[in-house]
Amino acid sequence: MQFDYIVVGAGSAGCALAARLSEDPGTSVALVEAGGSDRAREVGVPAAFAKLFRTARDWDFHTVAQPEMEHREMYWPRGRMLGGSSSMNAMMWVRGHRADYDGWGVPGWSHDEVMPYYRRLERRVGGNADGVYGTDGPVLVSDQRDMNETTRAFLAACEARGLKRLPELNVPDGEGHAPTPVTQKRGRRWSAADAYLRPARRRRNLTVVTDTQVTRVVIEDGRATGVERGDGRRLFARREVILSAGAVGSPHLLLLSGVGDPDHLREHGIEPVAERPAVGRHLQDHLAVAVLRHATVAVTLTGADTPRNVARYLLLRRGPFTSNVGEAVLFTRSDDALTAPDLELVFAPVPFSDHGLEAPTEHGVTVGVILLRPESSGRVALASADPLAAPLIDPGYLTADADLRRVIHGVRLAEELLDTAPLNEYVGGSMAPYPGAHDEKELVDYVRAHAQTIYHPTGTCRMGADDDAVVDPELRVRGVAGLRVADASVLPEIIRGHTNAPAIMIGERAADLVRRNA
Image 1: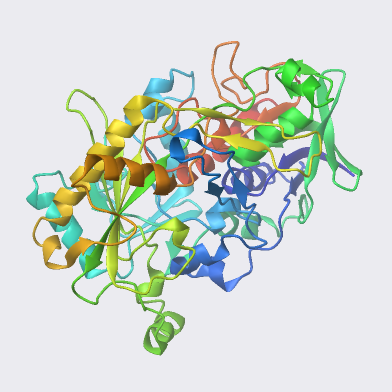
Image 2: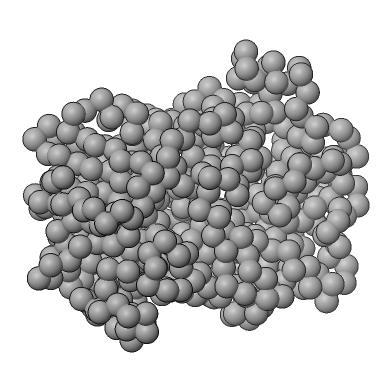
């Protein structure tokens, strides 16, 4: 089958890109997704996202053993369904800081240049101080529908400590605290598939292919001409192939297709077609540490699945099931000499550890301490030439000494906030496995043994104006005509925020770049 454009991956960026390209009725677009439908109750119910982990809708990746993390092979959930990770994330809409975009130094990607794309895609429901958000786009950005009272106490504790209250979380120079805006519609998840794909699928020129894993990009005479599927059959692209398979999937596909470090490719019997040593490198991720405390008042999300709360959600879309778990955030600096935040504290009105894989049995609260700007970085590499084998994922957590020091600073700040009125009226002592912050060695051991990803891998197909970058400022893969990458893998440096919003923005901008060159 032939199409003008083939988009690989129906995640945050892929849904936006395919939908925008198919707005032209004279253009044919195929969107190819390895996973299947997103039609599952756990997808729609905000508080149930952790129930999708380690299911058929999850890639269920693991890192290689991390030497600085007690040699753990750490679990990395990634969405494998329509909507990708936007169908199983915590729905937090966090664009990042002005300094991120301006600091990249990539033509066309400064803060002021990308903001029109954010405003084009957003439809803010609720507060919109200073017109921060767009109001007519496909992505619904809503206020928390039923914020927990402990979350309000967290925000009040931040204010009592003299920390700035932000009028809106996504102001350009956002340092301070605020409730988390969420991608929800009346208490139900609003994924990229909801925003873009469902309306677009009515178009005859858009073909959505599910349960089909692409195994390589077909490159002939230096040009991408299509993709090969797991069954050996091919789809052909008259104009372009665009990879939107994420920070793991996109570099993996490039490597399988012969685009990468030639020595690494030949190790696995793959003949290089384009020498791009940076493919898969510069992997950065946000590491998160859970500060857990017992709750002295039984008002948290623990035990929320009562018949009354189920009825409230089903009938009114109200109550604790509307919670995204990470209900409020604080962006702050570990050092006053810094000019932008390097730490994020996320408040959850429930004990949340080990990815929430087991439902809590005790009332408690969590402050997740997130390292926003890690100096550590790693790599996605081939494990074998078998396209169905998972790649090697090595984020290199805490391999830079400064990262651990900043995480510990964040933990101590979290403890100070938990001990500040009115939040201290709700919390008691430390909750296992968190030992508290009294003993330095014990705290460091806890970080190494229990810190986890907060699900934000980036950088493995780095964008830049320099020749070493994998893609140029128009997202074209250097050395291969007719091939682009459009997802969070192109971020030159990890964002001081979360990755769903930037990924969708990249999909929107990529559509304009592609159409401009059509």
